[in-house]
Length: 406
Image (cartoon, rainbow, N blue to C red):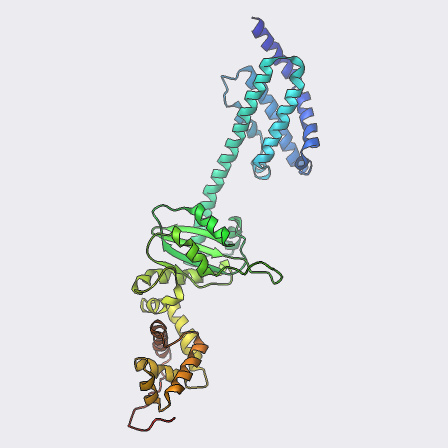
């Protein structure tokens, strides 16, 4: 009976001093936690409400700890939802430490070991409750971020997006404001997204991840280097793709061309997806392969972007050139890349053909003497001729036994 009466007396005493404890807690929060004083009045009031709820919850828990084992979780129900977004878990634990410290200091005079033990047990429960609240909030945020990221990547792949795309990307924590490239490969059996993001961070790159069935899509971005920045230059996208290659499944891996910003990433995505669809047609392709290296295969498969790229990057610059570069390239490719046969057809010296082919390489960036690049350029000439058959008709001089000009 004595023990019960003592507990009842202690409980009555705790209820009597609850207001005093709440006032002392608010005062100590202002004295010991700088972030509390910097808060707007509304948020300070919400934090104080949580502290008072914690004291009331402790008294209820002390009255009957077995009947309400999770009463500590009710403390955070008094807090508005936006408070969880503005107060970190570390700050919450500091708040709990202050509240527990105030209660401990106040009850020392009672010399009641049951109260001290109750405070220890309750502080443990309240700490676990705080961790649980923040874990559930983080899990919900993670699921929301995953759904938002999937929506953003899908918008980039389809090219169907609105003015809200930049804000959605910013909500995902995208920091890049420079060039962007899209990498498409096969989905591995076990997808290690955290490892992929870590590798991207080590390459100073931002990342958006999307999984579409057997395709794994990565939107890779990087910040523009500052003119006054003494750090190392940005890592090329192809090098970043090589670092990320181990996280893809075996098979095709295609990197789209860089575009100025993430809102333009759909152009890179279209090229990468088209290249991914035909990458198996190039027998010697070594992943990761650039989408622009698959232009012939993409054009044959009906990709309008590839056809447009070939015509604009090869055919038109040569056709608009003042020299006979286009005619020389036509002849060279038609004659099986033979310098002598080309020289005979054009009535020029083989060295002249060499010089013109060098000029072709300088104009378009591809070397017609290589077998793969010759295929790319021949496709470009054919497509350009189809697009403009009259004004761009290739010259062909019949050989009639005439002497070659030196």
